[in-house]
Length: 220
Length: 349
Image (cartoon, rainbow over all chains, first blue to last red; front, side):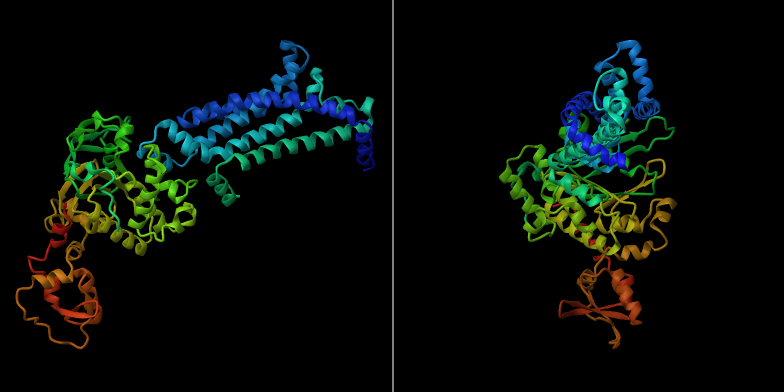
């Protein structure tokens, strides 16, 4: 218990250093997250729209879950060497599956009666997607991104073994920073993960059309 | 009631008959066709019900018309044009489409739902607003302003279905396709929405193809009924009176049920019988227990009232005024002139 309280004086004393590590941490976690969003969301939406690729989406998710990121980083050292790129590739691989599979499910699971009604009224496939499937699937797409975000921010901690910096440098280095430092770093990462998660939750509330926001309020 | 033929003057005057010409649909991977050489014509302004047990291909027949499902062979024409000569998306924008459970978009308001097709047709805002109000009045949801901003989840099943019909009518399409639109409603709401829809249909005169598994609904709504049997074959096509009086085969007779004779009585109202009676002599002994029935009740309903009262006839009323009497005999054997009067009135125009 004392160690926990010791973490706060540590934070005060090393605030500059922690901020610097946080900056690194955000870079190595958010860049791969953004890349996974840019690649995974469109692919997931498209596969969901044409109702194909369920096997692919599920398989990628399962492989992603089974793959230990630590092992991945170790293997990647052999290919891309040590450094930020290594960590970012590993985190991309970690973030991609939930983003892809949630986006796929979000669109694939849109009520078939609604999409049939939309087609029957003369919407083009693109209109069915943009007016029906995407708005209704938006909350689930964002859920996938939130899951991936928490996963990348917390897993970026182990990126330190590839020498890419971040808060992992503090957490995994008890020799230099003491138990107070380890705990301070861990708390810092936890708060960071929550903040990133809440950022995307807020994004949904702000960006979603009124009808979608209402729908969400009714179901939660 | 507000009519809207001014919006697209072509729609009401143009020939909008739907002709099924040897239409067959074989889904890939299936041995037997879902619909087998269907040959029917739905005349301009007519309401035709497709009925039959599941596996009869009635929904398939409907979805072939707006090309949600593709033809295997044969042709469907609307007016004089084959549906295959019109791009599917363009075709669908000229056909109203209402489905079971209403199919309303839950993230759209009532106004946005109704404006779906006008929006994709890029009507200007003022026109859409005017049309939306007209339609809400048409389906009886007034005052209009209280409904525009609501979401489907804030409406009852009957109200949702009314909005679904308004949405299908929005761009004033000459043809309407309705796929069990009232299937999910409770019996009382269902009756009310059926009555309203019939009234709307008579007012706007859209050529309507209406799928239902409920033969009573078909008898009530249809100018003509197409009965499909498993394997997608047409068993009979005729007016409700024809079908009930002369079922084409055992399948139709069985499908119509043992109460076929009673169902036929639902085609005629007490008022029609009274009007067709040649002898002014009522023949009704003035039992004190003769029930009073409104002239717009069907014979079937009147018969039920008479039976429940243990009487031999009924007093026909119109609001407060007494129009005359009908006997049990009149109810069970309506004069020839009265039968089918409704169908004639409902057909066309």
